[in-house]
Image 1 (cartoon, one colour):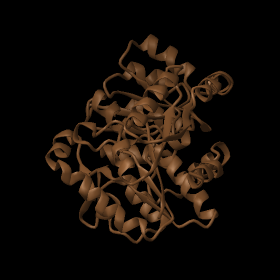
Image 2: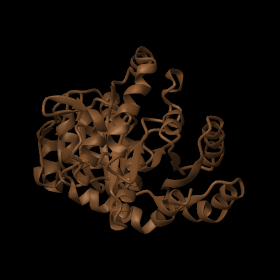
Image 3: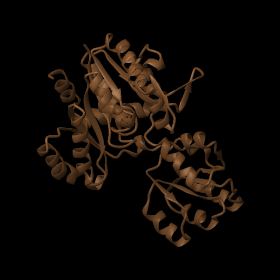
Length: 357
């Protein structure tokens, strides 16, 4: 029987796929036959004319999995997922277990990827712990350690998971800000371990992995590149939203290096100021052309100006949805993820603890 580990998190975009990817590579090094399955996914991309989940596309390609997408991700939902899960009723769990039975016989290690947060689907009996219990899987949480509040969050989720009869094997702390790295390691980790939570790794923020490239933003937002098209493969570290006075924008712009600026095309005052500071690219919202003077200045500075038709709020939301995504063809990010997990997560201990159960 295959050993199964369900990787979930208290919230979305907490590094589940990155950890799954790194752990899968380590398992392959140890000669394990590895499969990835996402019981519930979101229909956000098309492959061969059919909708499927982006994480499943990535893992299927990287691991060379032969199974069809409907087996690797038996339930697909959209953003209105509660209604869909409720309509499925008991059939939802049946479909997941049927797909899992097709997978487990060919592998000795199955990684299950969580959908959104660990409790998502509870109303329909399809939360991560409920699925994990049915397939006899342990659980690993990836947890954003961006504030001290993550400790209470971990303990709350631990109680929730265990209340459903599933073992929390441990956690990996992710997205740790540079200024909190020592505090998390020296103060927070001992608190978790004292409370019975095993910490397998600490991963700091990595903008090159977390943030999309300018090219990915252009593609997603159907933007028009007005200047410096040769620079759109770059990534940014921070976002500056130009919904403020010119004076305030300039103060923030000077503080933030390697930034992406999102601002209305009619804010020539802000545009002129930020182009004098280290800027990776500027997204011009509202479909408003900035004029020849700004274009000439951006060209001179080598800063891409991207014209989009969305308003500023929608643009920010769409960019946020791109964050943390690794495409199957993006070998650079895949390698970054692999190295990040290899260096910062004790994958060997995760596998040994799972085997020794």
